Length: 366
Length: 269
Image 1: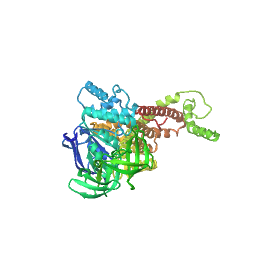
Image 2: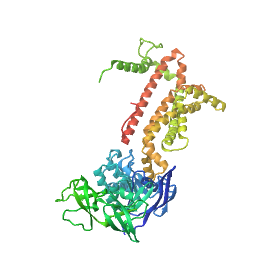
Image 3: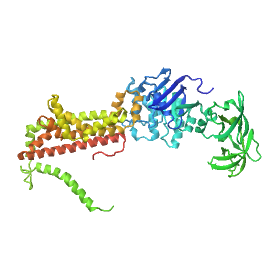
Image 4: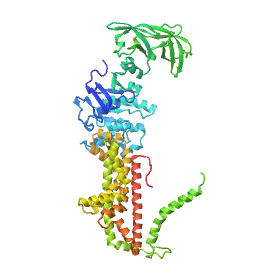
């Protein structure tokens, strides 16, 4: 059981389709997002992730299907009355207003007294780390500060769902990593459902409780980060998330709960049925992550299986070295990563090596 | 940089040709002679007194102000709708429609005026200041649309969506977000339309049914040599008025940009 299983449902998609003229942008989206979850929509540009986010916000109508938020059908519910708030990619800070006017904008129709509203604005600013910035002109802020203002402006309304449209893409790398952690902390603090749109798989893995990977208007896989990484449902997902080696294989036999394959360069191996996700009709390959492969020392024995190989390429990263290795005299090349611990020399191209691997780390795509 | 004396004298000559006659305007307006010619005869303000005392001129000025204010307001309001629609919405026939709206920009004004005159007379609408306003709105609206389209185009669509997202209706979003941010464009449009209307002659002449309108009135007065000096005084007042108006509009525009944190590009001054 993962984090999300015992939570009530916040958002439910039932066969959601969206057409722009002839273009089929969303092709039958199904799935649920749980209350209090940090959920990511991940995919390459043009996969429909932003469109899906905008249908939740109510900025886009759907062509068919149902979107439920907190048990209510959102058909004919306008964006300005939905229990969602959005942090825009451009942040959309109102340039003619001060920071506190921006943050307090959504409270305009709030019946509370002026003093109470000012207090709420101050609290929201403090929450995002902008205490004392209220009087500043919005256009005088840095990118990171604008984003915090956008967050405070959305969160002050205590929405049921906060929508984040690639909020970190405009920030530099250091700032982005910093904001990732801050966003996670913030989400835990407020307990609101966060839905993040991103094309950065690392960002999705770091931040999310669950991730929906989208290609061409469809959800290819919806799972928690670990499942997504270790047991990708399709070869395309495996390729999109991190690095995955693909080794051609033949299926030898299949029983109810196990598949025996003959992988080129690795040999015959028994896989649990859980390691062989649903058939898609592709020619069979087994996938291995670089870190599940280990180069053995001369006197070292593999705990499970080992295969001989020759180093074809060495890529030195400082803390890690990546090796591209031809497996067992074949033309199958895999990439593996080794930590550069003291006493382990970086090997040269052409060195004959033994590669240790574990059958349980394999995934079969067929 | 290499010096180019030919280009430099060309520039000087160009500017002199452009502004020389306008500089002569105040000089002769204060000249104590009915004959507009050098040498100057001495200083007087009597032409200004004569101008102020002219009852017909006062009526003409009042009429022109009424027309210019109405035309600037109507054209700018229509321009806001058209520019907004053309920037934000997609609808069938948009390109030809926008083309037709912009067409009066290049249509000979004489043709427009004659056509309007024929139509108005044949459907029995009496000529008045109102018909002048209608005709001039037709001429001014393309200018308003052109100015306002660029103002609306520079507006980030996310700003509107953000306001909707924060609970505002489309109308309050327009009022609270869009309107303040395109205000410099609205000011510019209003000013341009006002200026165009104020010295517009052809439509005022055709559709004004002989009511005194400043441009037509000035043209008429030039037939009488004795009236010329007071017309020069009027011209001087109008030039000062234009400069003040332009300066004010530019001040508003820069303030608007500074407030929105934008980079200044373009403008009049």
